[in-house]
Image (cartoon, rainbow over all chains, first blue to last red; front, side, top):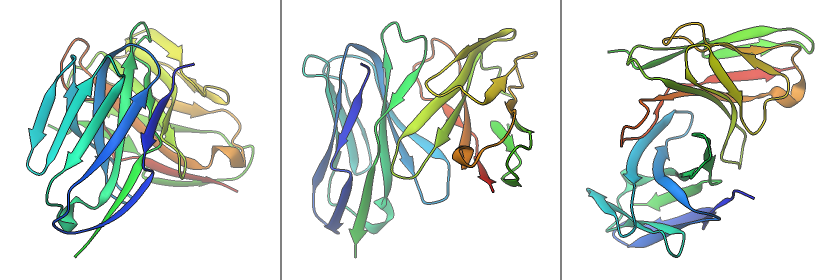
Length: 112
Length: 113
């Protein structure tokens, strides 16, 4: 079964702290995506990770991929309130005919 | 460059009614898809297309039809609306082979009463 699991599903943290969101998936993937969604809004692409060991950074967010462990992480450094949102990972599984499978999302609340 | 345009943004239907959600993109993307998003869940793929004249089912296709007569347009038809189809619907597109993410429309919030 093609599965993508995120944890935690909910995270409340203080500004200035660091934290990591985890994304596990069940079988070999072609691509792994991270998206951000603000309440009532559409989804914004953050990162696309293509190969083992890939690391991408944008501001206070850094995403990495370990294909052997079937694990991706989204690390938040020195969180600020503006990063409050729901973060999703999604996986293009090999041979999956472009069918993205999504995690349930991590709702992140950053308190001033 | 408009990206992915979805209409309408909001819709209320009565059980048994039919309607079409519109999706258009102006980026010449081969791949287009429809997702539904329900509270507490990730997105679930309804139908997708890799080019004009080609469509296929996703994870939750029952109760929905699609067609792809042009590269730009990918409408989603609800045949006989049911309360279980109350959801937020997103259209997304991508250039096949490109190493960047899917582009999403702004969504359609559908309520079936």
